Image (tube, rainbow, N blue to C red):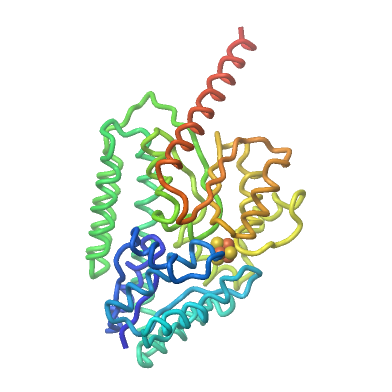
Length: 366
Ligand code: SF4
C-alpha cells in the first residue's frame, strides 16, 4: 500500500512524520503548482470550487508517483465537500488509476476517526504505536505553526526584505527533517531566536489586516495567490485565526468536551446570519464583526462558486461594524498580477484612511 494525501500548506510534514514511524510508505505529491491546478481544472466538473480542483490535481500527481491509497478530508456539513471523495475516485479511475480514496471523516468521528483510519492504513499497528506516532506528528505541526506566526509578525517590519521568508523556508525544511523530539526542540528554538533577531524598523507601525474566508484557501498559499507574503512585502502585518494545529486541538480534543472555539465568532455573526450556511461562511461574517475595531482592513478569501462564502460576501457590507473588506475570489481563471494590483490599491486605501484618522485625532487634541 502506498499512501498519499493532497496538499494543504505544510500538512504533509506531520503526516509524513507519523507514517514514517509506523513504517507506512507515504508518497508526497509535488508542492502545488501551475501543473497541479491545470490538471485539476482539466478533469473537474466545471462549476466546482478550487479546493476540489487543486486536491484533484494533487491526487493525480500522487497517482503518477505510484500512490494507490489516498486520504481525503470530507465532512457531513452543508457544503459539497462531503461528495468530493466519491467523485474524485471516479475521475481517477476513469483516468486509468486503480486507486482507493479514503475519506478522513474527522468532523463526525473526531480523534477516534483518525485513529481508526491510521489503524487501517498501517496494517493494524498497535494503538500505543499509533498514538506515539500521532503525538510526534502533532509536535511537528505545532512547531510549524509557531514559526509561521513569528514570520507573520517579522515580514512587514524587517529591514532587509525577504529575510523572514528565507528563514521560514529553512525552518520548514529543518522541521521536516527532524526525526526525534530533541532535534525538533532545538530546531524550533534555533529558528524562533533567529526570526526574533531579524533587524526591524523600530519606527514602523504596520497596517493590520485580518485574513478570513474558506479553510482550504486560507491554508494553501498557492490557491490564494500567496496573499500573506504579498501583503508582508507591502509592509502589512497579517492576522489569521485559522491554523491547522489549533483546528486539530479543538476538533480532536476540545470540541468533544463541549469547548467550541467558534462560539464567540458565531455569536458575533448572529445579528446578521442566524445559522450555519456550510463551509466557513458563518465564521467569515463573525470575524468581520469581531475584529472591525482591531484591524485596519480584512482580506476575505473566497473560492469562486463557493456558496457559503458568497453568502458571507453579500452580508459583510451591511454590518454595523465598519471596516474595509477586500474579497478575493480564488479560481484558475484569475491571474496573480491582477490580484497584486488590487492588494496594492487596498493597502493604499487603508494607509490613507489611517492618515486621515490620525490627523482628525490631532485636530481634536489641539
Ligand atoms: S466551503 Fe466552499 S470552497 Fe470549501 S469545499 Fe465547500 S463549497 Fe468548496
